[in-house]
Image (cartoon, rainbow, N blue to C red; front, side, top):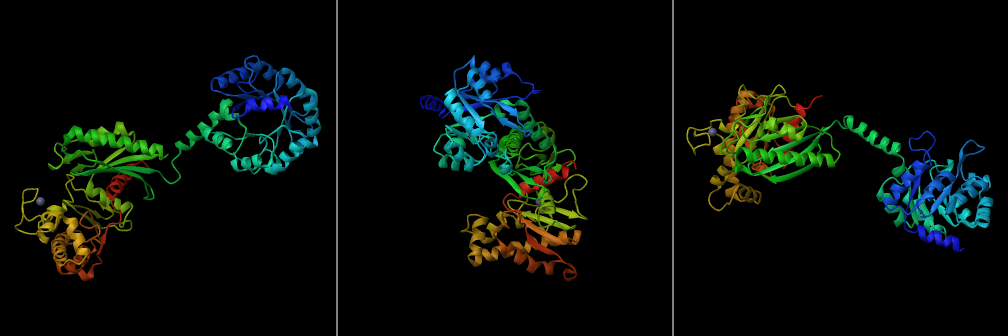
Length: 538
Ligand SMILES: [Zn+2]
């Protein structure tokens, strides 16, 4: 069988491009098919599958690579049959086909496929490729003398109609079961699938629609665009950037409160206004890039920053010297062109309160207060399910609630502010020499160190005094604490719960819950995303 092994050798390891068009297609006709074939040759196609003598003759004028010839005809049962007569095969051979494919499924056999197969091999001296849908059909075709089999018709017969996509497992089984070369064909739409087909043991791979049917390719993209135009089923996602004094955290949060991705970059705190803005823009672009990569349709971007922010304009109303030059910066205006979606800016502590309301412990609370305890002390207060921002955006300065007449000078220039009695530096001060930082005090307290535990108890007393002031003012149902001093530090809130009844009038008539936030290390990102969610159009 010299003619057979020669063609098989040429096809080995090649991409075979199926160039076919139906009457009415924009590319119908032999000249058009030849142009597709020429383009495919430039792209390293090593063979073609062509329908009809006219297309084969035209393509053959340009190339001598193997051509699988088929003749599709509507048959007596009203359905298309591949190469249903010997005469059709003869015309394909005369036009330049290197091998003939025919329908060797059970249906094809009812119309004499095996007799035709034998006659083509004997009289035309061309190898025959059996298009099959099942293993049994493949084995029968090989027994009848087929030189190769192809998985072309899997999914296109009544028996296999449940198969709607490329099936590499079937292909591997087929290669294992039949003693002749197997050509992979059918619903191979992506390069990776062609790779899988070769790894399954195929001699060569036929790709058609994905290369030579522009209207089908267009339809797939159009459907994807349509899907992207609709709001995601889950209800969208929100991007958040938490600009901290040391690190900037960013990420995306789904409407259900799931953190979809996240990242951390150092904050160039001393870079000044322009440097910080550039940093925010770069972070926003990176955030948008990751969202796009993950297929997330972001509805809005939220920025949480230190300093007081005018929420309506997105301008920093006032920032301390922790972020030099930040006062007056129009963050929202600067970031909208980069983000391409609505941008909302909020004070970081306020943003945490918004996050607790939307994603956290305060989902069902109308009146609650969030305290953040870290380098500084801040917070956010909800009354009647609304975040109180105040007339000048300066509300919720919980760190500057006076709880004493004296004490270390505060960043605001006064003495006696809660922040100076309840921040990380205060805890280290109470613990005395031998503790490097607040984390060391908390770790020691958790190990049972009495000095450390006493220090935490003392901080809790001051915190109770500050909390009492807020409770007397707002009568909340829930206090939520977050920040570095609260993480891994259950003793602090235990001591606070013990102390509060002594500090608050009519405590026994109130139901005030004291909880540690559950938003975690990326709470600030949740906060920024929650602010974005409030901004997003609904
Ligand atoms: Zn102060």
